[in-house]
Structures are given as C-alpha cells and as structure tokens.
Length: 104
Image 1 (spheres, rainbow, N blue to C red):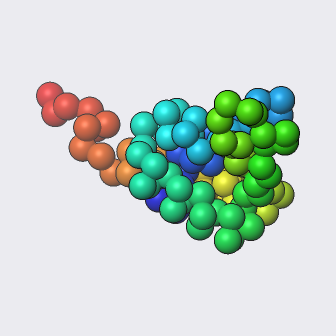
Image 2 (cartoon, one colour):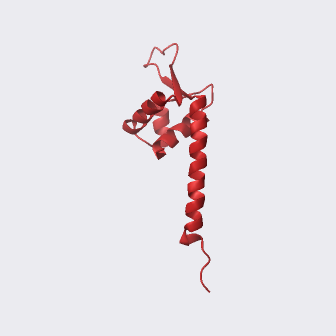
Image 3 (cartoon, rainbow, N blue to C red):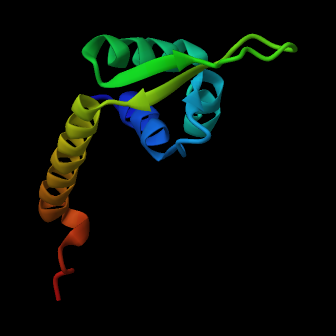
C-alpha cells in the first residue's frame, strides 16, 4: 500500500459523518495533488474499500461534491496495513544504528 493511499484513507477514516471527505478536501488535507488523489480514490472504489455518494441536493452555486466513506472491507484492510507498517517500523528501528548505544 502506498503512502498516498494511506494518506487518503487517513482522511476518509477521520472525517466526521456529518462532514464527509470529498475530493479537493482530501487533496488539501494530504498535500497531494488531484492527479495523485483521484486515481487513488478510483483504485479504492474499484477494490471496494471505499464507497461514494453525490451531494444531494446539489448546491445552486457550484457542482455537487462526491463524498467518500470507508467500507467494512476498507476498514479491515486499512487496519491490516497499519499493523504491517508498525511491524516494519519496529523491525527497522531495531536494526537501525541510530538506536544503538555509542561505544565507550
């Protein structure tokens, strides 16, 4: 799982139900451009990790937003990815010369 996908899922997972995540908000929150975020959203939709719905009713002054939410499969996959990442970090930290005591 890429960092972009993890960042996108972080935003979607932490968005309040009453104020769901939408495309440009995800771009702003992650710092990734639309050319990176929207393909990631597309992949997550196709994988069944997120769902989407259009803003209803559409506002009169702008196009409707497409809101994203996590699915149960996405929640499970996200949790597995977080656990795997934490394990990799522990393993890397354990091997890192930066964490060893200096020679005396």
